Length: 439
Image 1: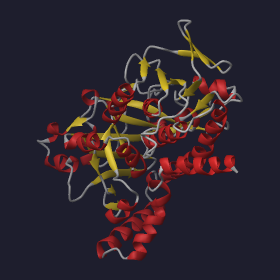
Image 2: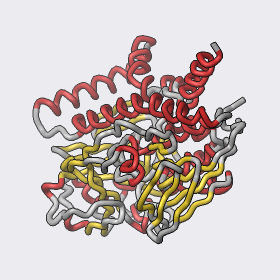
Image 3: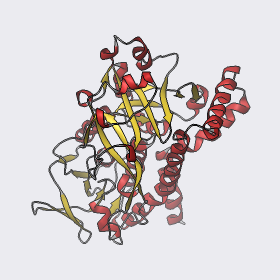
Image 4: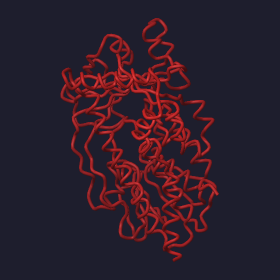
């Protein structure tokens, strides 16, 4: 039986702190498994922030398995290459098919709404304007800002890198050091750039059009900066994410978060003319700063009744390739494990298994995403020339045709990341653990 259809013999009550992608996806899967879930979030309502997000095959295969294939076909677009302007890094279709799913891009709000509706339909209760100020383990409960105390059998922290639940688990807040850059996401119409405003500019219209015979997305690189963009909303809109050094933005201040709005004229984009015209369209941008944050050493407390997940456990930079994917994988592993719950004494084993399965994976992804910045933030000079030549060679060889050796090389490169199957990882753990208990 598929774990998405399996209902746990023992159903329990969960409180999830945080109604982001991790919280909604986990609530959906836990409700599917027969558990009762309440989500608490301090925001006034659903977080439909601007911009888009990547859904690599490791995330897409989970969403398709959850029943979202039709919604993905409606809102997302498949892609097969990232084009460094004048150079191209292509994933061959045959190789991507081996990962088990498509590589897709989607508006963040479409992904969010998809998960929000699914969680509600599955039975989750979501309460906004509910700021959690304290978390306790014995018994599991949370205190809200208004003095309300809510109890459950388990409390899950999906409340981001500045997590209240993390502080209860490890004893102190997550330490953070500014990385030195911020991500800027355009706020046109509270979303992204509608393509119909580009019709009078043939260059920009062609740049932002989705080409079925060339499903790629552009990346502009520069000295300590880059811009990544992709067509979303069925081809009707264009998402742009710009990464700039904080040292070049006047009066950046200490404010941080998706509610920080920065006027266009304060941003020193300094890119080639075509991109400049595109970046000049929105009057304002949302800004979120990049911080270096450590993965939590412990994801659960001694009682096994408090658990961290998502960025509360393993922070990742915003707007990078795997930002949402890691949270979706977390939810699938969590839901699969807890669909097996049949006795109270299994709780501690399942939460320990969650960290055992997810920590190595998320640390490896963090290292890859961090290394990727070194590739795109190369200034003019021999190092950038060498990078461009390597990409050019890959593109040239690809145009000559891909033999089995070249296919195998690319598969080896992406298998670990794109080929990962969160459900299989959790099911394999259960088989091994259950067998050891029986022997």
